[in-house]
Image (cartoon, rainbow, N blue to C red):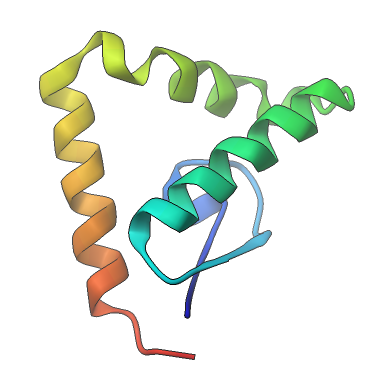
Length: 78
């Protein structure tokens, strides 16, 4: 298992997101952003909107996705 933070993925906070794969961490980030915004956390709204609109721009989205996967792969296990 590896850990990245909300901030590592473009969000505004340092909540630890843990997963066995980069995709697990990305899914945890998506849930975190959705839950934070639903709870009224306005600070997370820009990151949530970015996440929701990410795939409207495939090239930029794939660059972001590859970057997350590379940073995840470079992290130590733990």
